[in-house]
Image (tube, rainbow, N blue to C red; front, side, top):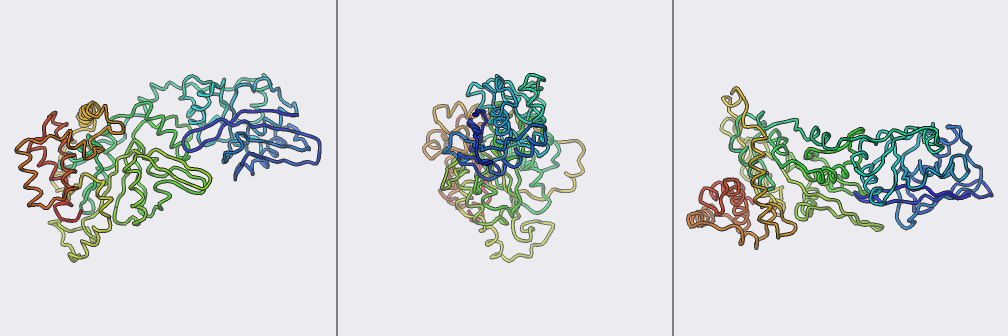
Length: 511
C-alpha cells in the first residue's frame, strides 16, 4: 500500500515542494522516516502515532516507511506531521485519496489530533502557487498569513479529524478571504510621529537627510537627549513600503517565527533594536540550522544599535558584510544560505563613559584619554560605513514646555519621496544602486558636480578641519542628498557646509 502527499519545506526564506511518500508493508511493526529528516521531523512519528490513535483512526501495526523527496536536502521542522499522518491514513484506505491531487499540506500535530501553527506559511504559499498547486491546506492560525497570496486557494483546518472529513467530502474547510489592498493600507499606518519630538530641529533635519539618501547615521549625545526617540521615528519618514517589499519582509519574519499569529502582512518598515548583549549569530543569523538574525529582520527598515560602544567588538565587526552587500551569507558544511539585509543603520552613543562630555549643565568626570578610548571602541572600518555623525545636545526646558507639535512625519516623508525619485532616475542604469549612500567613488565623480564656491569650501574643510579622504567622499555623498532635497543639480556652498556639519567625529579627529 502506497500513498503520496505533497508538502513543502523552507530553505532560507524561500520554500520548495516536498513529496511525502508513505509505504506500508507486512512485517515487524516499524516506523522509519528517510530523506534527511532532522530534529522535529524524526520526533514527528510519536506525534503522528498519538494523533491518529486519539482521533479515532487505526494506526497500522506494520512496516511503515516514509520518504521525503527530494531526499538529498535536509528537512527540519514540525510541519511534516500532518502530511505524514494523511499519507498513512490514505495508504490504509481510511480516507479517500481522490481530493489529495494537487493539494499541498503542512501542519504540526498535537497528541490529541489538533493541527498547530507552523513557521513559513507565506513562503510555502508562494511556492505552492508557483508550482501550480490547486490548494494549500494548513493550520487555521496561519490562514491569514498565507491568504495574502493571490491566485491560490488557501484552506484552514483545526484538527486531523476535520481534515479527514474534508478529504472524505463530508465537510468543507474555511477558505482565506483577505483584501490585500485594504489590509495593506490599514497596516501601513505609523504608530509614532516626528511631531511628538520636542525641540532638536538640527537632529530632525539630519535624519531627514539620512532618510532621503539612505545614509547610515550615528547619534552622539548625553543621556536623555532624545536619541532613542528620534531613532524610533526614523522609519516613519522613509518611503512607504510597496506590496512586493512587504511580502519579502513578511517572509523573513515568518521564517524566523516572529510574525504574530493572525498577522497577515508586515506593511510598516521594520524597526529592530537588539540589546548590546546580543551575540554575533543573533545579530546576523546562524545556528546549526541557520535562522535569520536581527539584520535580516530589519530588512527594508531600520536597525537601531543603542549604546554602540557597549556591543562586543566581534559583534560589531560582523556588520560589515550586510552594510556593504545588503545581504548575509551563512555557510555551513551541508548548506549555504543567503538572507536579505538591506537596512538603514541608526546607532547612538554617549560622548564619553560618564555621558556628559561637552554638556554645559553637567561636569564630565572622564579624563581625555578615557574619552578617546571609549570612542575608539567603535572601529574605523565600521565608522567608514556610517555617513552621518550627528551631535544631539540635551533639550532645553523651553523646548520641552512648548505647546503644539512639530512638523509631522507625513510632511517630511513627502520631501524624502521626491528626493528618492530623483535618485532612482539618476541611478536607473546603475544596478544595485538606488540611493546616494550606495555611490562608489566613480559615481561620486560622475554625479557630484561641485560649484566653484563649494570647491573652495571643501578645500578649506580638508586643510583646516583635517578631514580625511574618506571624510571627503562622505561629505560629497551627503551634500548630494542635501542638494536633492533642495532640487538642485549642482552642489552649492550651502549644501557642502550642511554636509560638513554631519561629520562631527571627523572634526574631532576620531574617525
